[in-house]
Length: 147
Image 1 (cartoon, helix red, strand yellow):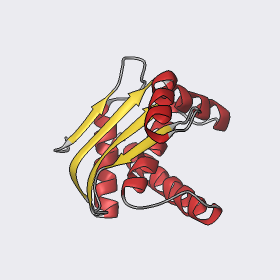
Image 2 (cartoon, rainbow, N blue to C red):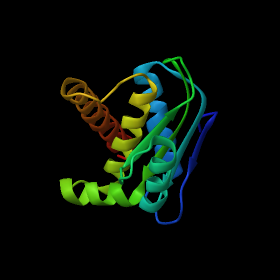
Image 3 (cartoon, rainbow, N blue to C red):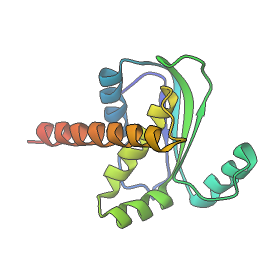
């Protein structure tokens, strides 16, 4: 387990906390960062909408919200709020296992904490390529360990 990492979710989530810890450990090694404090919260769509309206002024559902409490990009201090319901919709839409979609969203949030942005087309493309690359490598690593 990784020190200073907390993963919170309800019984509705079809993934283990150990898998999320393994993913964050993999990303730490690949991206060379430390963790001061990182909370990863899997919540309902209604709850993510409340957070989006209250803190960001956006009145729409989203799959992830990232709060970065640090000015540093090599020492993470933040929170990820991931809508498990939106993740399920994404997984169905893109025909991928739900665990892969959860992994992708964690990767996306951590990239934001590291200073990556998706506010324009080019930046979004960079993030998507990184997400896909890290997801593919992590899933392959998981498969190799389970053999």
